[in-house]
Length: 118
Image (tube, rainbow, N blue to C red; front, side, top):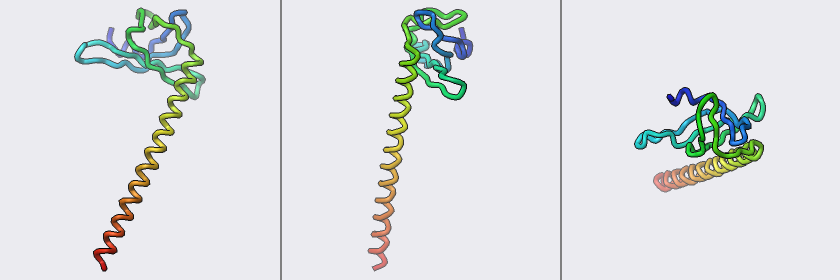
């Protein structure tokens, strides 16, 4: 099977509940194996979240990708949303740090320019 055939397939958990569609696959070129798959968990038409599953947890691939583990879709969506919120918070803090550092460099440059003028 080619990776592009895997993308878009529906994933089912161990209880045959629909989890979502395969969105991406992580490939280890040294081993020549897929190491993980990313599944899009659809909440509604507008938003979705993603979870990553180790490829070891894939039981079989046929018309569906059957996972060897149970996935609580609601809990997975909640966990993915928390991770997304945390990532956004980290990015905001990083942006503030960069802004602060830029201001400091700007102030130092202005002070250095004043010293040279005097």
